[in-house]
Length: 233
Image (cartoon, rainbow, N blue to C red; front, side):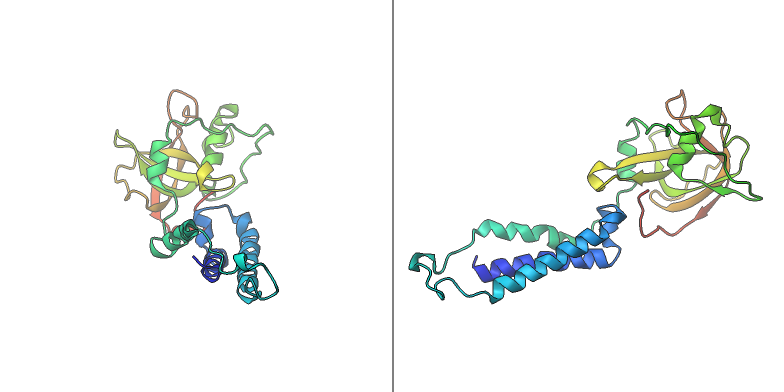
């Protein structure tokens, strides 16, 4: 690989980063605060590409002759593999496959601070799946007991035929992903796996993370939803 080819590989990687960051593609891999660092990195790589292409060739300014025609290791070609995968395969966001295999992972603990009551409402209150689980495990679920709740997430299942409204959270990137899920009861017609839904219902009293049974919601309605641009909490 010549120096010019190396520069083009660097430019290709910079273009991939900008393409991901200027759209929503980057949200499949990292959290939303990474947008601007990715943009800056992409611009730097493109600037580096221009510098590598425009600087004088070795030997033009008196370098030793043995430096002229220096080659870059062919292994550098491997650097384009991630970019090609992004353009060709466009891997989807993490979903039911990961959630079902991490069902036994420890559930995140409730915040140390007191959980405030839900706001007054004539209709269902929108609550994140993880927050619903926290509330179920604190003060005997008093903050959600008897309240109409709406949970939005994707559908995952288990080997017993149960289905769940599920969300995946990441702290930095997809490598540290963790899943939260709430079992849906009294609604046997399970939507398609990985489909996004809004489940409205009430907490099944006595179910909580870390207890003898999984956190559950007694559903009164299940409505289809479009997947959000950012599928991670």
